[in-house]
Image (cartoon, rainbow over all chains, first blue to last red; front, side, top):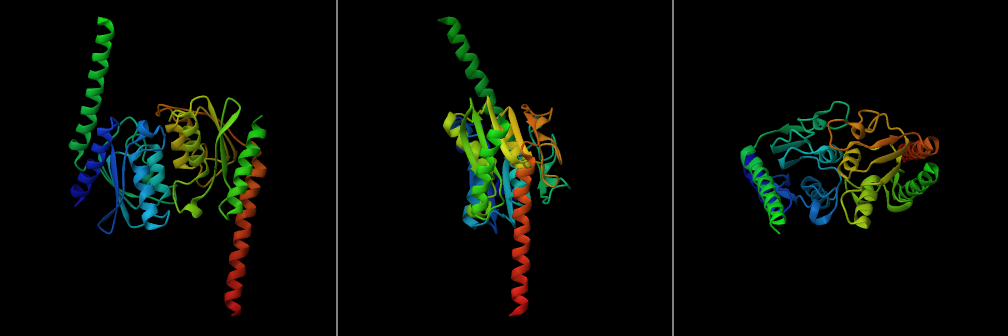
Length: 160
Length: 160
């Protein structure tokens, strides 16, 4: 079941990729139904808060008509950052499932674990590594292509 | 100078209060000019991300046309929560000034200090306690009134 929903989050990530954004996608599920979708739009929108999870959470809140996203599950292709982990705590999402870990910026287990922090008034159950390879491969390929493009444009500048 | 801008953040907090929202306000200043304003709208909008800082940050990004809020200062009446501290890190705000501390939920010095976390790729300079009493008094009065209203409505229910 987790894989089925993670595939939908991956589809969201691919929408970001098509816009040349870092491919990260998220969905919020309530009673088996997808009530929020989001893909990273930071560059496109030039908004620091336009992460996949933030967009999915806002859509889900609007659908439910409440800031409390009780009884929902958030699926996201990459371990949430500090802001998105905070938004998960603020929206009381009880269940978070993510794909790839983010050793450099992840705050749901890697650098710190804000989702299972006993001092907050909310804690989530976290499941890690669902379709991890597929989620991580998207990011690795994206950044590899970026580096190749950069190298190419440097070579062009040297030629001219 | 800090007090002048904190008063503008307090004005924002009062707008939240007028809507029966927890009175918290924030502004973003760039080269002496206010480029973002926000007041807590969580209940009004039923959005978990409608905190004062998030709204001010989004407005500032839209004005500057960039997700990077370099060379800005964020003024906020209450110590930022986990999500808003994260959004400050994500938007690279270099300077944060807050009024009252939040021992229960503050993540910019109280429960933890996400703004000065060496493992993140951004750290802010934080100044605390500017117009602390005025900022804190608004919150104390708001919650005192709320408790009195609750007591009153309980008494009414017992009478009828």
